[in-house]
Length: 162
Image (cartoon, rainbow, N blue to C red; front, side):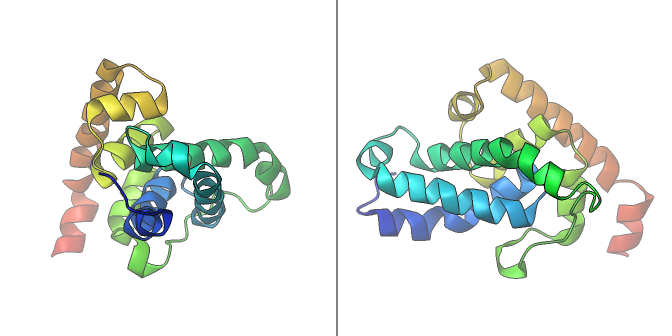
């Protein structure tokens, strides 16, 4: 999609990118920071990003990279705190139960689900964004969906639905 301005791009994509990064990183607090930084970088390079094959994928990958870059620092800051599993603001979130199931997936599977399902990128763009082969995207997607299918048809899910 071609966006007439950065403002339009930001307003159209920010919530989806935030959800994708939260899913991939499991850290809503840090995802917010990473997404903000990614959009700031996109604004600085708007001419380049606007002409990119997939501007939304560019921002999502930049945000995930930003998260990974800060991970070592954040890990030292919060060694005692453990893993954050707070569910983000409801207006920008997935279903809390589903989000927890997604967070149990390995990192690469979460990233593939975030890009393929939440951001609706095709296999080629997902592979390019993550720096992996297209076949690997399919493998991770299948494994993630199989894991989700198994966990969502288990006793916990059936009792939650009843």
